[in-house]
Length: 461
Image (cartoon, rainbow, N blue to C red; front, side, top):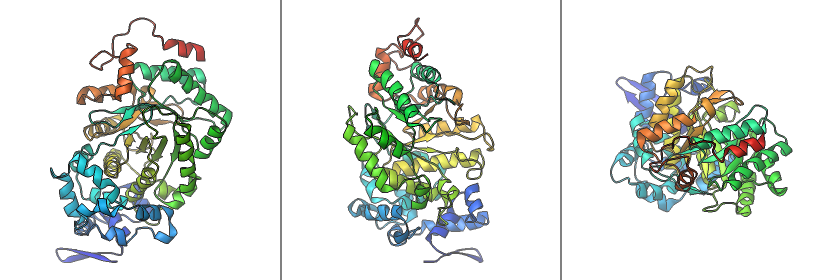
């Protein structure tokens, strides 16, 4: 189906839905690299206006990637809930934007609506929204998940404690875990990106984290961010696997480049839940995504990177994860060139994920060859906190010494908690107070001699 929109004497034609979506996307380097971006600001505006007049029902009859060619498309359309979609089924994309911004779109209404929305609908409406619109609506979409604590409650923000080490050194990792816990971080997960793919090394890291969680009765969960097939093998060997991790994308081809498909993700999810290691719930999957992953795998099918990203959330949603996060600036300036593009992408991703019912967090980050700096990340972090972000990263000094990128620190989490009055997961908050790490108001308590947690580092050393 072709689309046409006139601005003054000039008409702009868009060959199909994916062309219209790409041309309506706010400028970003990845779409320019793919050769699908609008050629001018005027064409971008024309595409937005044309998209605003498009009925939402079109997304159910015209797939941006053919049904026969892509299992993610099949997942999206086969799992679509027509009953949930009914309240907005007569709306255009523009009408839908107005509805989302209205008082009628309460958290309860939006929660019921999520299963009726396709990722393409979410991506489309985000393209005609201002940053403040993305913040306002996302804030109305809390998504609550549970494993050993409760994540995503309104007024809370969790932190992934990320104690990476370039040689997987136990003492170095333990020191970073101690650092994070004493700053009140770690309620989302204690999650290590391993430098090695060796199963014995990964098993050792899992047991190190299981030891500290068990010994100090910490209401949190651990994860080694290895390939999903490694996690399956480790579970078969009896390793203490809490969350199963996998990077995912929004097309079958991009997921194939990660070495996964929907069947292997289901196998892993079923195996993790069968272990029954959660205490307050069994949301046992952890997914990471990022704009540009499908393009970098040459598996984007001419679809813009933000729409591909939203499709990844449909993959995540199918497996009821505890955590999903967009590593928004990690892939590099080829896809998100500067601070402005990273900020916009982070807000879009958070909005789309939450609208689709996914527990989305954001790794507020950039690589050192991007036209961005920590001030840009401060801005994005603050905007996401206003938008009700589920969780962020906590890395010593905000500088990941293993992955070599810049993210957010334990101190950054304290900053947004102070500014917005944000709490941690309630079970973790209570544990921190019981350990004397925080005062009754949730702020860090004054240091008072040697802390019992120090024995953990001494033992690892």
